[in-house]
Length: 400
Image 1 (cartoon, one colour):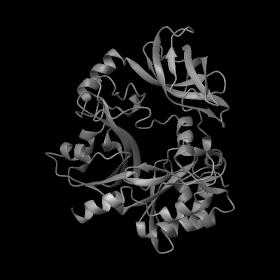
Image 2: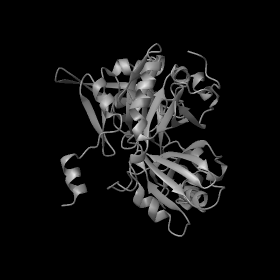
Image 3: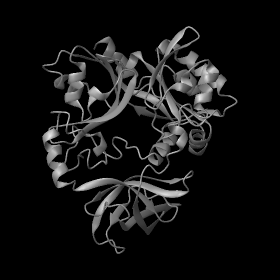
Image 4: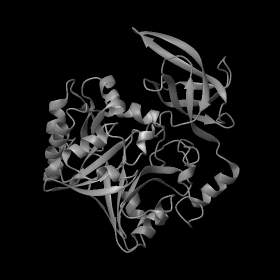
């Protein structure tokens, strides 16, 4: 057995460079695995952490996000062949959200592309995709290298996030527009800041050397002490991303590379991501199938729902009639939104029931003290995002 295999056996989940700080801040000792790392699910309570995102400032350990460095003379051409967006339109020091598909036009994964130069990119994904990326690179003058362990990352989100960054000494950070990338020095330590995030709110993501991780964490906590800064776990982040209408792998869709049953994978059109598909840019993986789907229309679609009552419709089935005789879809993500004061959900719904304003019924099961109750509640297809504050795009953001 090699040294690497021994280490993996003894420690199957790696600590992030922030682990000493996140462990110290944890009050309930609730951790979850993510891409081979152990990360915090809840620090104190989900409610406290959620309201930090929406009212003050939150810090989330983003290090396990899988990162690929893509370089070479054909880097742009390679990515343009891989993903559904036109990468040629992405300027240096800008970020773009995208998806990539198999030949059937079904989504393998989603992620963000950071353009760092004419022939240098960073691709970030929630799950590891190296085999697909390498197979897709055949015939291109391009190098694809996973660099996850060489970059520590934090997500700083909330109304006071810009104020916290300015207080740390990042002069000019307020001039970053949505999806901009900036290079800064924190004392004598380089740090990359992107105006990106997974909350639908004002926010930034910080990228740094692992050796600087604890230093940056401490500086943020000190600068944010008067602005309500709080570390948050995955559960609070999940609430914010549902309000923002963002999709999550293995909750709202499953990668077409891992599905076992036919018909369980999804296309960009079915996920409501048609705005990411550029059929005019030339050939890319899945284009032929997506052209046909655009012509015929999707058979199902991920939509936003308003649901009557205040009981989250988690994993509920959807029916065309109140007597629940004809199933037309299912809830993928659901919550009671404290900010919107609405019972909201994301759901995969069959045609033709996904039209805006369409009404149908959700079959909700609730467990109270080990007693199950069944409720049938009206559901209405509505616009998403459910929550989109103006501050998320203001440049510069308001001082708070």
